[in-house]
Length: 208
Image (cartoon, rainbow, N blue to C red; front, side, top):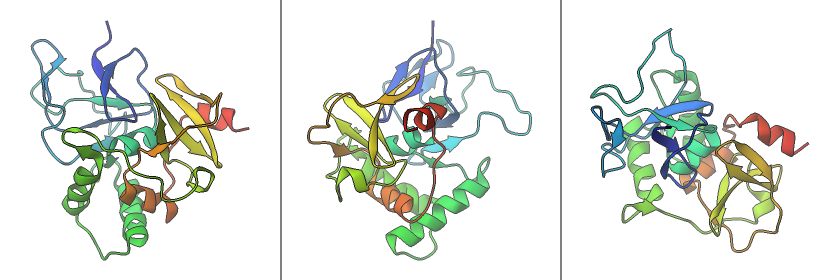
């Protein structure tokens, strides 16, 4: 029975056998005795995206009163949900992300907590995922941006939408009707400024 620890682009946490390319956390949001989630879905505004392996360390998932291990199909999924790269295990990526964030958002040097505060406002609306109007036509969105159309989430790759699933991406079978932006606007501007998130291999296969 899979644990409820897989994050979708809308930020929901679901149970599915697939694990994906990244792990991350939102603080402690589980009961180690039952390995089930608490009612809350975050305990800190720092929502991180981490590597699956770091310096040979091994963790037993949801085994202790430490941060709750959450998994993402890829980095685009994590960014859409409102996470950012971790400055501890992904320092180089986190610094690249911060530099692109500062350039895209036209601001000076930011501390991680300052980015977290902006992201927390942009990713949530009364406890639920905040959707944003598209700031440009769908085909002009940068690679790695994600949108929501109806009940489905889509990655934008080379101007075309790919439908998200826990196992990977497939080509969209229809034209998207009234898509809304999932990726927080400040993160979108970091993508426009040059940050390139890691995409699941299926994204490359489907856009060939």
